[in-house]
Image (cartoon, rainbow, N blue to C red; front, top):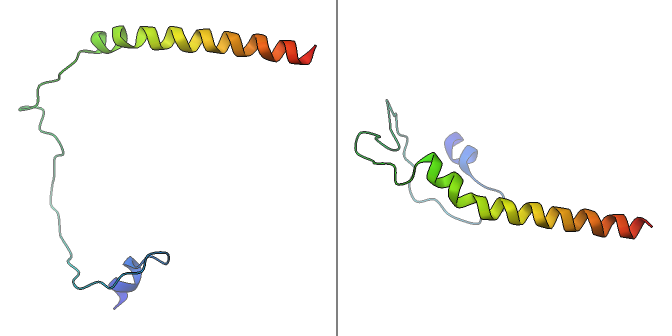
Length: 71
């Protein structure tokens, strides 16, 4: 009963049918031995250049608009 009370959520109406406790000794989300990276850091940096330039442009425009509002 103590486990049930510790897992219950106040804003969620449900009736639990079962509860299980797992004793995990180890896990690995992604085994790097068998997962080949799809992109290099350099590829990602290249892909982000246009986005960063666009953000810089927008920030500049915003700064100009704010300076005009203060005048």
